Structures are given as C-alpha cells and as structure tokens.
Length: 166
Length: 332
Image 1 (cartoon, helix red, strand yellow):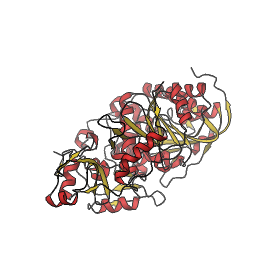
Image 2: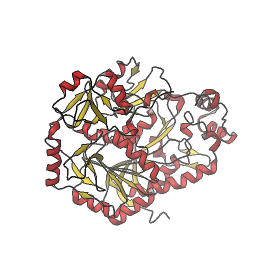
Image 3: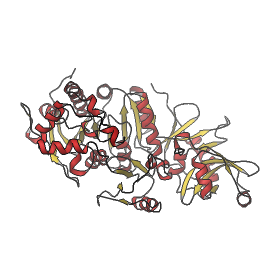
C-alpha cells in the first residue's frame, strides 16, 4: 500500500500561517504527503477516504502536484512553496514579491542567484526569508533573500531552467 | 532530423503495398513523400495557467508569427515563424508551463472526448502526458484523472509534465494497463465517465518525426500490437459507465491496430460508434481490409492522414457504452 498521509486542518492552518507573508489566506486543495518532507496538493473530487481506499489496492505513484517543503526540520516553521504552487495561488499573492529586471530574469532562468541593485536593496529592505520572484505579470518561482538584502538564492528546479543553446 | 539524414530511411516494399491497398497508389506516393517533411510547429495553450489571448500577445511580442487554426479551439496554436533548434522548448513561456509542445493530431482524442469538470477520467497509457494535461485543462483541474503508465522512467516524465502544467486533479498509477483494469474491476466499484485508450502501436503515423520507424516496421509487429490493443481496449471498456464515452486512438494507420480492434469491441460489447466532429479533414474508418470485413458502424471512426492536414497520421474512434453486456469472461 502506498504510504499516504493527509494533512489535517491544524497542519493546513500552520502552512497557511507560513504563507500569510505572501498574502495567502486559503489553500483550496487537499494537502497530503507521501514522504516525510514534501507536501502535495490535490484539487480533484475524491475525498480523503476515497483516496485512502484507492491507495490500498492501486500502485499509486503520485497524487496532485508538489506543493512545497518543510525546511530546517521545523514543523512548518519554514515552508518553501514550489514554483507550481506559487502559480496555483498567484491570485492571492500580493506581498513579499521581488520584481526582477530583464537581465536578472535571464539569469534567473539559468538557475543563477540574483544580485540585487542598490535601489532594489533599499526597496526590499523589509523582506525576509522566502520571496516570490516576478517579472512583469509572470511569477517565476521562489527565492530566498539574504539577511543583508544583497542576494537572492535561486530555488528554480533544474528541469525548469533554460538550456544554454550552442 | 535533417532532410539529408531522413532520406537514408526507406519504406519496406510490403509497407508500400499495404498503403497502396489502403488509399490507392497516387495517395500512397504522397503519403511516403510527405514522410520526409517536418510537421509545422504546433503548441497548445495551457489554459490552467494562461488564456490563449494572453499567450498570443506574449508570443507575438517576441516577434513570433502564429495563428490559431480552429476558432472553436483557440488553445491550438501553430507557430509559423522559423525557430532555431530547441527554441520552442526553451522559452520563458514554455518553462513556466504556459504552453505544451504538441502535434495537432495528438490533440484530437481529447478534443473529441471533451472531458468536463467534475468527471472521472481514465487515461490508461498516459505518458508523456500530452493528452492528460490537455484533459486536465478542459476539466479545469476538477473531477479526477487516473493517469497510468507502466515504466518508472515514463512515469517520471509524466509527473514532470503534470507539475509544469499545474495539473492537480490527477492520480498517477504504475501498472500494466490490462492488469490495472483487472485490479480496479476486482477490488472496487469504480467506473469512469470517460476513458482514453491511446494505445501503444507501430507508429506508422509518426514517420515525419521518426523516420527510423521505416526500419522497425514489420507485419509481425503490427499483429502483435493488435493482440495487445484488443486486450487493453476491452479491459478498459469494462470499466466505463453505461452512457460513458471512450476514445480508442493510435498513431498508426494499419487497420489491424485500428478498425480491427474496434471491430473486436463491437462483437463483444453493447456499444455505439459515435460520429466525431472536428474541424479538419478526416477520412472514414475502413470496413474491409484484406479478406476481413469489419462492423459497418466503424465507418464513424476517423483516419487522419499526414497529407490531408499537414499533421502526423492518426486514428481515433469514439465509443459510447450502451449497457454492461460483455461477452468476454477473461481475455487471457
């Protein structure tokens, strides 16, 4: 049987509280875990009970999308949203956003960390931890701003990075 | 593959004879000639993330020339600009999952099936996920899709494509298609509103992108696939709700893998073959092949020839289940 674990409302509330920094106040999906860290989100019509039952007799590999990950081992003390979860929740996201310049956007897609300009450092001096990266209207993924506000660490997964063309 | 590379591959005489028997000499000549030409670049807007209009604006702002060939399906887009190698899969819009690179003929099964929000869909041979992601977009991430494939490597590709397209209503399973159906039938009361059986096949329709198929082509392979396809399609049909619809499709044109499989279903199930209305040139299913005569209703199935619409070749058939009558006890 596939080892599936559904997050109850208390754990879901904790994740929402972690994401309040982005302006997120609800997660309209069923949250579940297959392993210890990774949380997945399912938007479909099956209930917890139905999914449990399905996992009891079918070789289920995945349900829904990768939503995010607990980091630093804390019980949602720090929760890193995935790029796709950022897209799914983008209508709610209105805080903790870093707008990239066109050159920085190019660097972002190559997987590089982003050096912020002095002007950006001033603009984003109140931000901390995980930030939503945006270029124009497009949310590009999640980064982490350094304590001195000079650098953003890039968490774009390798398979989402632009290939250097020969 | 470059044209100079492609012309190294030639159809076997028996393949030529069969195509001539199927569509006549003149048309078969055109079929084999176009096999050496590239298909146009086509993409499908992923409406889970962006509207076709917004995507169109973004692509046009890159100076791409594009057009939407079907007014009722604005998500289908053809890129007319000549792009560099790999460029279509390396844009910001592609990396963000705003569009999926998909050949037009591969979009047809889901356009014909029209899955709706809230429905339960089974996609039995789902990887790499072109049609699963298309179905999820039509279903607006509601209802549930069971997407199955056999090999771990193919499941990984399927999973990556589902993630990139933001598909959240899917349960991915890994099992042999026939065994999965048996398991569902035995262990649950689960029945599906819609089923897609895009069956593994001899790929005669995809010569334009993989001319190596010329080398691998042989009648024994076709016969082997036909047996497997009958098992998969009949196992799936048992799981369809009465009144539900199933698409049986392949990217091949050999009647043994297409009409003969549907004929087998007609003989063993209480079904109706529905007409398919799609905005491109479709030819009717064949009702005679060699010494075999198939059920007359199969003329409602569709054959898509590469030379008719400048696409790959494809076969699709829409089946409606009328009752739970089934004459097969166990196919094995």
